[in-house]
Length: 189
Image (cartoon, rainbow, N blue to C red; front, side, top):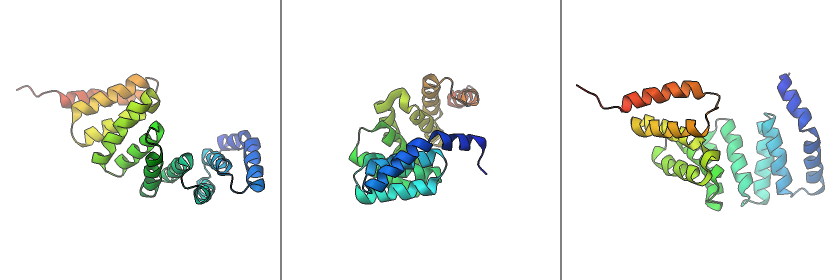
């Protein structure tokens, strides 16, 4: 049985879901309808159905950027980061100025431990998207901390908290920021 919130989501997306299903029935190669229906499935937690729709959409049009990125996102939500990576790479290759695409690619590279590849992509995502891609600064902070570059980790986390002061985890992140600043401070003897 689904939690109440999932039932609410299904009811909320019932009419759009039916419209997209009808559009696909009438025009099976309607890539945008497949993509939007897959997004609804992802919001409802039905990732296998979303993945099937997105893979079929890419068979129809393998240059559809939103489909590439959404399939990568669907796989990421299943914690299949290595499987998601080529779709994010292809999406960014097709649309290099896509800030969200760069954020998804950079965060996936970070999660896969590829810090040297992740850093410039995350920096580009933030440069392109600003506050809308503040999460890039969060991943940069974690990346720099992993490299023991605490000053840069603190600076990135400070930017993240400045951009998203009401972030749900803001208070624990402020504690982390204080620890990073302390670790970055020179040792006085």
